[in-house]
Image (cartoon, rainbow, N blue to C red; front, side):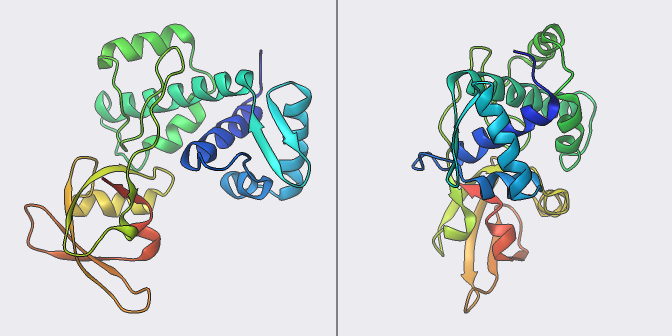
Length: 221
């Protein structure tokens, strides 16, 4: 089924939110609106349209869930996006804080032939530069791994599993201090009353203070 870039963005958003919250049967309309930076009314209208196309099951005032057809489209767009991010970072040297915004545009126009060529050239990678799994050609993808760094226990070491890719300033800072998938980090201390998290990266002496917002953008295992 041919779908517009806007429709694909909604399907992708539903999948991404649902993947992070597998325990919830429906993705709330407000969550979709917040994820895409649109009004709740706009989100409701698009979800109704997608429901009429058989791509989502929409329950008014509650939210929506992807149908099998909607899930297939969402995962194909996700595959395009993450392969493009990997190609831009590894083949073209684009900084990891920029590859997300570039892939957001290109994911909608990538042909299946070019997708296959990129995947082959990269050796069929399993993860993108931010640690997110890349769906296989047949739409398989593992469950999310890791929990937010903010929830990690003080005095223990953890490995960075993945990092949110939609905050360029955060990604730039994290790269500067050495926080990337595979890096080992230790929670040295917690500030009082929701204060900063003091983090040390393996192999470095400096301790960095992370806000809660930044700590919740990093997932560790």
